[in-house]
Image (cartoon, rainbow, N blue to C red):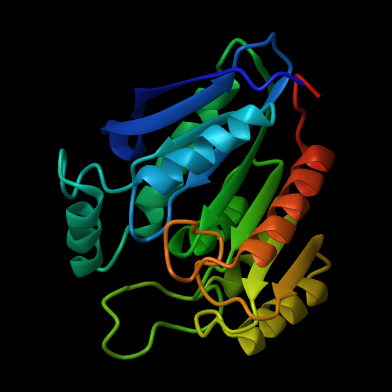
Length: 250
């Protein structure tokens, strides 16, 4: 498979018809590609999130990362936009679903799409990936250390979100969860609780927890990066999406 790609900034009509910025990366070969909506981590729509988006394109996927903080701080740096969004309690769930749904529709409407779309999210985006999978017609979802799918943020944390366990009956697609054994949000106990809830509802899922890894172990530009865990995690992602999504160049 050739890894020639094109990457560019586009505009997507998000929740409520708001025009939001998004980063699109796509292979340059012919069609038959599955799509992946990349939900950025809490630090925002930054260079690492865009690198992840390009990585999916090199593997044969159409990939789109919407800037979920477009409304909070248009034109601001990722750090400033993230700080503004965090101070406001994070991205509201209904707006997140609208923005991710719009991104998924954008990918399906592309000429080289085969109509299948998955979602992946990191950090706060991990929870949002799970929320999207419970709310939208998606083909697969990957949750990377998504906190507060079970449980609530501790006192003093500005993030204002509620648990999603009650949404499990609505889960529409298989889920892959990738977690760190040293993480506190979510802790191994919380991921075990989520696994039990998914099992009780008969949902299709698989979880992998990596020893020696904490939160943000995929983020190569941060001290929390754990190369071995990230390598194994990427291998699971390629296998999982390879099963449920198509790669036109594969």
